[in-house]
Image (cartoon, rainbow, N blue to C red; front, side, top):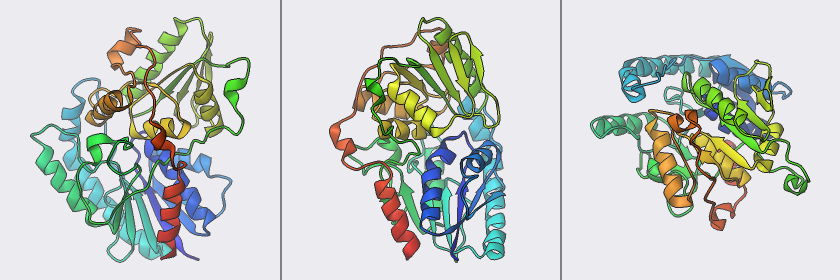
Length: 358
């Protein structure tokens, strides 16, 4: 039986979320799958796949990157040595795992050390150009090209650059000669029935919390405060696997919701607020829903994406400080019809099937 190693970065829940269709696709194609990650990402994937046979989970090395309320970018830059050391640890772990488990393919979602020179490998990333201050840009681009070159291919979860690309300048560079754009990748699917035709909307206000601490908890608390100051019912999806739900008046918080619960709530929402993290944006496209975007403070990637979606699709956005002060803009914007010419995951599953067959 052929076995693939699928490694997932544990920076928030986004990488685990968008890689889930790839894992399920490999299982559906008859492959044995070793899933490797750390922390909440690994716990989340274990919960989502606990009823699937053919999948085994492993705790791999991974840097525990920390954030702060202020000067986030400077703190991230200061942790570069720790990140590089973690990548070296990943490489050593991967070499041992490949031998011990007879791995014949490797798929890595932004785990830059999870490769082996003797095994065909794919790096999944939407960062072909690192959004860092100009002073650090040459070094950042050199490093990403260097690490990407160790993989056989690079897959980008987006449409090719152009009017329907959702990533803007983040994919404007070429870092690998074998780069494929695999379309919209999302675990969320439009509900089978038209929920918008029902007479009542359970939760007109929907907030989706994502990203690393301390900003994750800050956003959760701010969303709760905002919803409690409005007459409508609200629901917050705050990804923390294993925690129980809570109810504060007319505001319900789910820490470990199912994909169906999230999809249904998003599709019936009247006002939707989420981060401008890349996986959240993939989910919005998959469900064809507008949202008010709030970049994680200090994360230039999310700030760039928020600007791109404001200019390209007319989406409203505001800062974390605005949310704390209940200064939320009106919903706006929409997607061009050409963005939906192919169903989410279709191109990705075709590429996966072809790659695993070779």
